[in-house]
Each structure stands twice: as C-alpha cells, then as structure tokens.
Amino acid sequence: MGAGSLRRVSAGRSFNSIRAELIGSDLDELFYYFFHIDERDDSPETFQYQWNKLGSFSWNPKQIANIIGRIGDHVEFLDECEPDHAQELRRIMNRSWHQWEEPALNAIDRFQPRHLSMTIQAHRQLGFVPTPEFKRHWLRAARKTAKQYRPSHFTGQIHDAASLGVFLPQTAFTNLLDRVSTSSDFLRGRQRTTLLWSLAIHDAMRPLPECKEIAELLRPHIQIRRFDVAQQKMLHDAEKYFGWEPTVDNPVREETRSGYEKDFARALRRAGIETRKEEGRIPGFNNAIDITGTLNGTDVDIEVDGSTHFNQIAGVPQSLNPPYKGKDLLRSRRLQQAAPEARILRVPHTVADIIMGKGVGRSYSKERRGEIARHFIQKVTEQPAGLFKAAIKSVNDEGDFVLAHLIKPQRARSRHTP
Image (cartoon, rainbow, N blue to C red; front, top):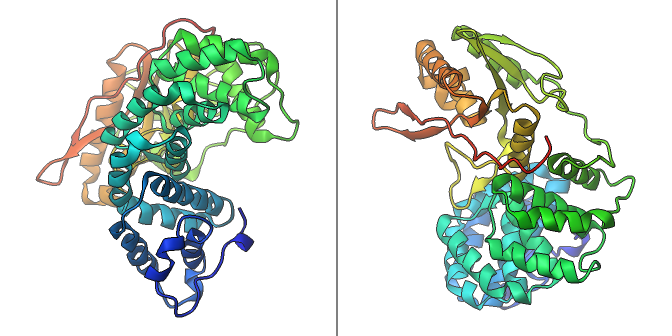
C-alpha cells in the first residue's frame, strides 16, 4: 500500500455521504485525512471525532472485519514511513477500541476464517493484546473453524497470536500437524520461516509436543534469501531455541548499553546496590544483561526493558504492567536455557521510571524510590535461580504503589538442548 493509493476527502463532502462506500478503497480517504492533518488547521482530536462517528452505524460481519483490518494495514504502513503518526493513530484507536470490539464480539461467531484472521492480524499490527473476553471468543471460534483453514489462515493466526503473546488452543496445533504431515508443500517460502519462529514462541510459553513435531517437519524445507534480515533473525532464534545446529548467524547486532540503562544503574547505586556491566556474561548473548546488581553478596542479572518490548492491552491506553511481546517471551526462555543457574530480573520501563524518579516517580522521595529498588533485588536474591519480572500490582488510595510479588515465567520442560 502506498500514499498514492490514498485519496483526499472531497471538499465540501459530508462525512455521512461517504459512509456507504467506506468498505473498500474509499475507507482510505479518512486515513488520508489523518496523514495530512498537519497541513490543515485541524488536530488529531478532529480526526478522532470523525472516526468515532463510524461507531454509530450498523455493520455486517464482513464490514466489521474489513474496517478493523484496514485500521491495522494503515498503522503498519505508517510504521514504515511516519512512526510518530503511527503512534498517534494507535493512541486514537486504543481510546475508541470499545466501539469496534463490541460489534466484533457480536459478529465473531459468524466470521468466516478469513474475517477472523483479518481481525486478529489487525490486533498484531496495532500491538493490541485482545481483552480477556475477546480472547475467549476468538479461541472458541478458532477451535470451531480450524478444519476450514487455508495455509495462510494457519500461518497468520499462529504468527499473530505468537507476536501478541497469546497461546492458541492445542487443537490448532493438532490440526496444523495433520495438514503439514500430509503435504510438504502445505506452506511456501517465507510462511515456513515465520511459522517456525511462531512455533518456538508458543513452545516457549507452553511446551507442546506438536510444536516441535511441526518444526521438525518444516526444518528441511526452510529457505532464506540472503538479504532478508528479518527472516534470518527469525530462523536464528528458532534454531537456537530448538537446539538445532545453526544454519545462519544472528544478523542483528545487539545494542550496547544505552543512556537509559546507565541512569537506572545510577539509581540502583543510590539505593545501596552495587552494579557492574559484563559483556558476554550469558553465553550467546554479548549484551543481553544491561546491569549486574549485587546485594548481600548475591548477583542479580538485570535487563531494563523500554516500551518497544511491550504490546498494549486493547482499550487500555496506559498500563502499569504492559504485556511482553511474543519475541521477548522467546528471548526470556532462551536466556533461561543459556544460563539455568542465573537469577535474571527483567524490569519494565513502568517500574524503571518510578525507581529513577521519572514521570509518576517524581512524586516519590529518593528514600522511597530506593526502598522500591531494594525490594525487587532483595526478593530475587531470596529465590532459587530463575527468570523474573518486576511488576506493580495497583495504586492505592494514597497514591502509593503496592508492589506485587515478582512474576516468574512458567519453566519449560526439559525437552530442548540449551
């Protein structure tokens, strides 16, 4: 999709008059209006007002799926050319997501497989993890329609679910195993690598024998274009996870320590926690560990995770505990495989900002922020080896944070070679 395919809303044409044509290319007109909003006297709020008016109309299941699908397509397009506009559009969509989720819920039992796939793909493109209610209906519909799936539906939904950190029902993998077992040409080209990577994420979340069986069937048929960095990265991570002999090197150089991580290390030192940086501390991950903190003689390896590591919860613009992306869940499991005796703590930016006194953290004294930092590190030192996540449970009436217990990801069964 390119900007040339987007058409300007005709001058003097009422918003209601294009309603009948919104399903199809004319839906692009409204998004084109958003793309060029800086050239007008309008603001994003004007676009939001016009967008919200769509919710007052009645749509059939096909139209609902098409509208949600177009939302995802346009945000993905903006990610490539106008990232700031993409984030603004995500905020607008998240604030009004209820007006699309409710009709989608009412229609989901009448969705054809491609309509369901289109809707879930939009969630992945937007980075919106479905609400629990929508997730229940989605998984129920997936179980009912799995035998009708085309290859693209299988690959698409498993990939979208993996990216969102949502585990599909076992029947989805059982049906996929049957299809792949009977036809080596069931999937082609990039679909195979994408599916292999998605299977690794699902198995990292909840080990299933079907995931590895399908992966082994796909393995001989994987072909990677030399210059396709994204596919090389997927294949590299999947091969490492499944313990296979690697066929490609990691094409992405891991970032060195950022200013954000240095600020967090200083905040830990102010809290009385010794810190240091060791490259290659975990085999195969030269810069994975941002900080090694020491409290009472016990080391804790710390990763500080910025906002790019997380999805959003659909309809929830801000969350104290945003959900990790699927690729980060796979990374967590790989870290655990590579260093089974280590204590590793992942600190989301929402927690790190509080400890550093940024954002809402500015309302806390240095002493209180130091207590929060020591609380998390101390809790990890009291645990056996494992991988943990710092989390905030809620905010109480006094405006103070109630600190939750550390969340320890489910340990994978010992089926893969570290």
